[in-house]
Image (tube, rainbow, N blue to C red; front, side):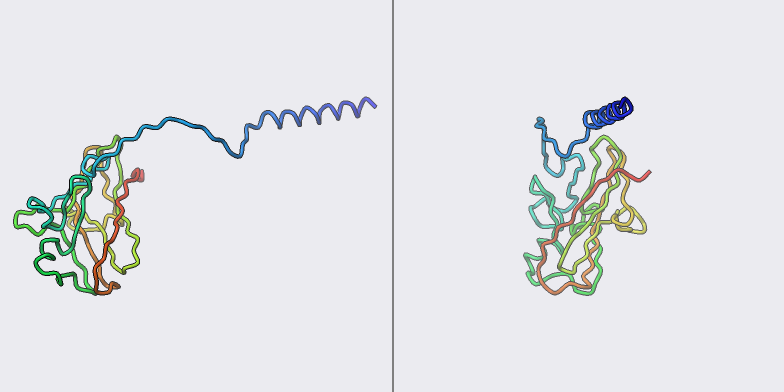
Length: 187
């Protein structure tokens, strides 16, 4: 009889330890205050600024409206003067500077204004058949940033151009989105 009492006591003690001491939960909800400040492209932690010939408005391939940097190929001013002008299909185009005579190298500058080094690359999702990628205009190989991310230390920048492949595209006007990503570099 005493043996059964001892076994029952161990069983009860083990059950209470498991029930109280596990700390597991399936869901939790907690409200916290979060302060977030957003900024224009050229003032963000990963700053993006145009390097185009936008002094007289939207005439070049890259420009900023004060909030967002935008790009147009073959160039907005050229399309206004000749609406049928465009990129040929089954081709590869590299734009390493804007259309102006005094244009600096690169259509955009990506600057790390954060607090740690980052690896910057681009990614595009499209149904149009166009392939768009960024490349470092100061690199002799013009390797796409998606294949070889630019590693930027704090305060560092990279000037980029655009490579556009039109092999699978139809004739038409396209509005594409290119995502610029900054991750911690592989160590």
